[in-house]
Image (tube, rainbow, N blue to C red; front, side, top):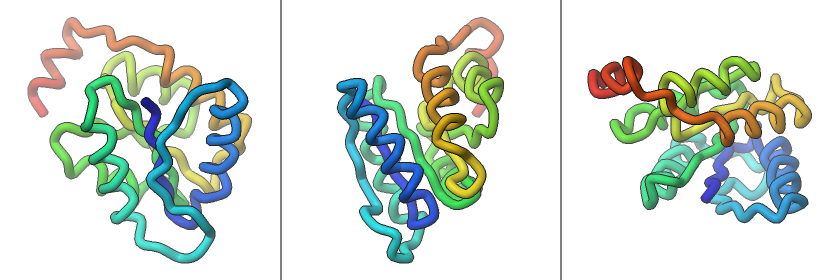
Length: 139
């Protein structure tokens, strides 16, 4: 399942991403926020992490203004591997080398077109394991 979370600065992009998933008949769980009204991003990052951890197959997509705040909150949970990505290459290697389970996107600096490209790569790239698995165990 894909878990969506955002703050007020990520709301517009989250809604566009949700519309993309709906057009592809892909179900998402949206933990908010549900408007542009100012909110505290830690509340939504924590709610998103809780839902991601309900099933090891769940993937999170979290969006705030820069992506930095959501990343910092999400990565406080030792079972979350959140990657702030700003390119297709970032999205590929977040999964390939780090087995990231949450993609973090900047709502201010990412177009919907770029976000969709990163999301598609994030969702379709497999973890390589091998030497990377050893490194994950070091976390």
